[in-house]
Length: 457
Image (tube, rainbow, N blue to C red):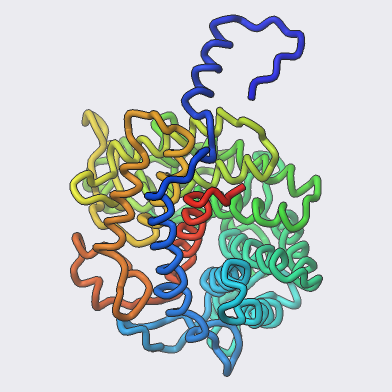
């Protein structure tokens, strides 16, 4: 809605704004079609029976607390079951959300409380603060106990979700402690944003002079930044404190206007002053050898399109067309360069090699989390821009078909780690590990279900 407050607007600017709003006039369809209901019901059934029931209570570690992480292709627990803050947090988040979505099914709030207890008592450094990155199954810290902003962001994210589900004051207390620990140790008061690498005391780890080219140590990065944005978005709903809002808005601006480039993809790594780290002037051989430092990650791009829109909504930015347009640009470049229009699905990675007219695909796999995030963002775009020539809703349906045909394991549960069209051997891979804990799938399906039914905010 455009509000005119006795100000004389330039007519051309006003007409441009009216045109933009006519294109993205509604976030919620005025009429929920039968087709949307059918897809929503499919997703709801698969979310509960294929995903949630496959993991819980099977992953509850009744011996040591927390959650088991590693499962083979038949969903049988295997290995030492070391526990990482990221996957433990994702399981806690899943159960916190399932408690609200499926209140009459299984005791998901108890499963969440079980996970919160492990984070609070075993993964939080009782002496120095902050979450350990990795502990063994019993909860003993592993290695040099260094800490990361990324890991602590997921701790904050999940504990905030648990508090919103349970109203447990201990959860809010630990969420506040995590936020303040991050703000004290990781936040950059000069250049803004957060430093990723911290030692066990919470001191910032600087980049060694003799670092190898593909070392990430000492850089700021998009991955920790987008998940800090995600965590602050969740935390602000639990504790709408002015400082939290300040940090949330700071991250929106940083990611939208600095970390995302003019093409619509995220720059991966930066010097502390936000100077981009680029290999573009290097040879193709050097770039491909060290591509982890510098490439277009279609999964992160299309996930961040959603995270930015969600964050601006929770921050109270009404009719935020600047963020919407940036999210649209991110989505469109993924569709233009990283989308398989034959069967659906987004590729893993691309690169803009110097002197070449277009992006080159340097990773044509289709990992599970990218497909999850793509599904959610395509549906949002279809509601924001229903008349767009890219036909987002048709691509959303093709993406859902791709997931059903190539990713969902109907026999053992959950999704394969990679689409079978590109990686047939994924059928034999682990169903769960410390990096795969059903959070991307859960969040995407639940968001889509609410949106398809017209029940989202």
